[in-house]
Length: 190
Image (cartoon, rainbow, N blue to C red; front, top):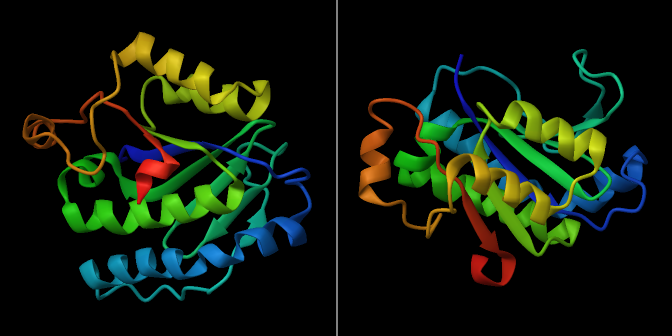
């Protein structure tokens, strides 16, 4: 079992349970999602999974009270009242250590954040604190500031740049999953 990438973003979606409207809102992000799918096909040419070029909505079996929106490239969004959690099939260690994997995912995360009206993105692994943090976003409606405060208490201050991962953090990925997190304001997300 791997440790995956999580990103929280604020959203301005009035009724995220309206599947058709939310899928329509997310439609402009499909090119970035398709780029993620293409990346995965390039590193695993034997993958024969068909990739639909649209967002879909479903109710995952493990938590029946929320919708999960799915896009090509194994991108998933779950909405809480104030934040959305974007998760992916990509591993946190790869995100930190493989430049091309990080670039293609960052483009998709930023594209999603923009259409949702986000001002910031918070990147963290889906291990440890995420077991409590993601339900707090979905069920309790915490804010981005509250999310960052929890991560800061648990892991210390955010790392300086998700654009350029520090070499010592990249080195840590060879021995395990670094307990680091990042925050990015959208205007800096270029």
